[in-house]
Every structure is written in C-alpha cells, then in structure tokens.
Length: 141
Image 1 (cartoon, rainbow, N blue to C red):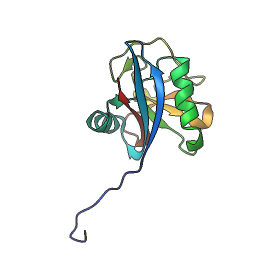
Image 2: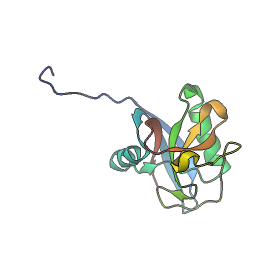
Image 3: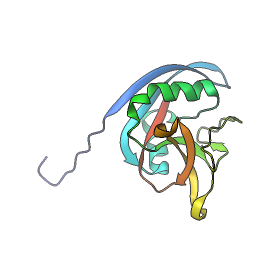
Image 4: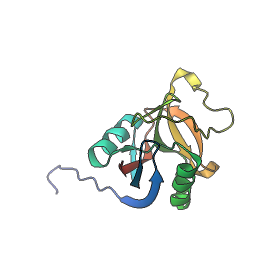
C-alpha cells in the first residue's frame, strides 16, 4: 500500500425500493454513491457497476428517491440521469419534471446535465457536466 499505489475507498449505500417503469413493472434498487464525479464519469460508473444513472419519470419515483435520501440533505447537488433537459441516460421517455423556479437556465451556455437538490425539496437544476458531485445509480430494469 505504501508503494505509490492509491487506493480509493467508496462508500456505497444500497437503498432498495420498488419502482414502476413505464417500460415494464420491475424491481429496482437505488444506489447513492458517495463519490464526487463529473456527470459523464458518474454515468460510466453506474453502467459499469449497476445499470445506469437514475431516471425519475414520475412523481412516485421522485418521491421514493427523495424519501430514501432525505438524510443526505447536506449534499447540495446529486447527479441524476437527465441530459439536456429531455434525454434520460437509459433512453427512457417521460414528460415528468421537477425543475426549480428559473431552471433550466443553461447559464453560460454550459449547463447540460441535471442535478437534484435535496436541500430544496428535491427540485432539479441544470449544472455544468464537469462539476464533480455524488450521484444516484439504479440496478435492475
């Protein structure tokens, strides 16, 4: 361990919930990853270790994510799988949204990825994809 090799310890909390997908009824578990990564790195991590970044396609899914992570309010932003305000990472479709007032605003023409603010009732905000934040993956269909 002392030979210049860096070891990264990730603390992953598995949070299970039943979620109804528009594609099919399935059991899924949410995984809150306590690592700071860019949106793209978070997406890659989720796809390698789980299924994908979480999609929030309806109020029920939104409420379950909010309930499961209500004790993690000290994380200002947490990545979810929405890109450019309309494309979910897992290619699912939904018209559901929970944007904070004034969002998305694409400030500086550089905010294309979506984060959830648990300190603001789970509202969504567009952020620069190169910002490092914790994130939520899901496992299952």
